[in-house]
Image 1 (cartoon, rainbow, N blue to C red):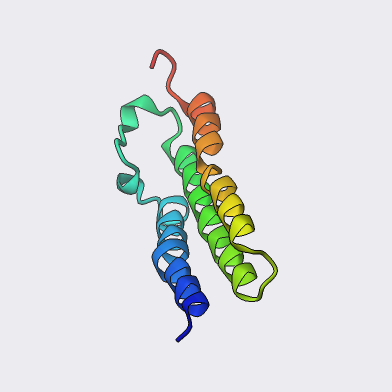
Image 2: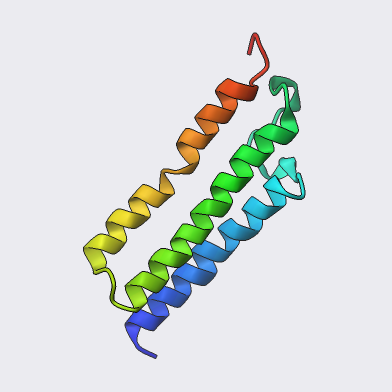
Length: 108
């Protein structure tokens, strides 16, 4: 097995798949206890907040998978891989901020 295939498999199974599963559990199945530091009293609409966070993590997983495939087929080099992974990993941060502003309980 060559190094490129091994790297892509690691990205898919250790990066993409866990993000997709956790994002699905949070957004669709409403497993809000998977959110670190979850305190329902600080959120006005917990279901909507969980959807924002869950779908952003799910999107992160899909993007990691697409980036890994693009790297494997040679569409991007290592520098492009690093840059795209950096940008993709930042996606949940603005989604959390938007969700916190939109659904945070007043006075928190």
